[in-house]
Length: 76
Image (tube, rainbow, N blue to C red; front, top):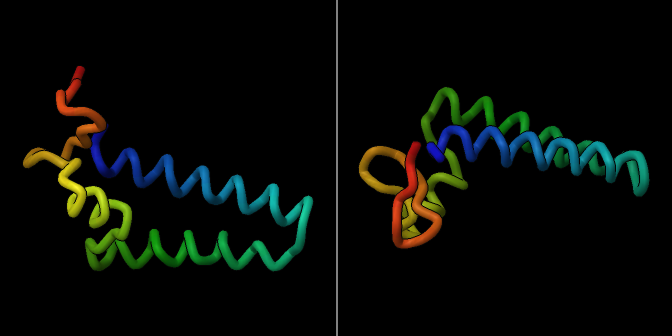
């Protein structure tokens, strides 16, 4: 999986989680949705993305931008 794909899945998941939390808990959870949106916009302009940075620091991203979940990089 490419890092860009992971960022999209992560952003979509957090947004859907936030919608559920707004419905069941409190409207204040819209701040989480706003944070996700602002982070996506800033990463498009700056290229800085916290999840990608964390995975890179953990040594899970190879030179081609693919994420290695285990020791073997499985690509199709």
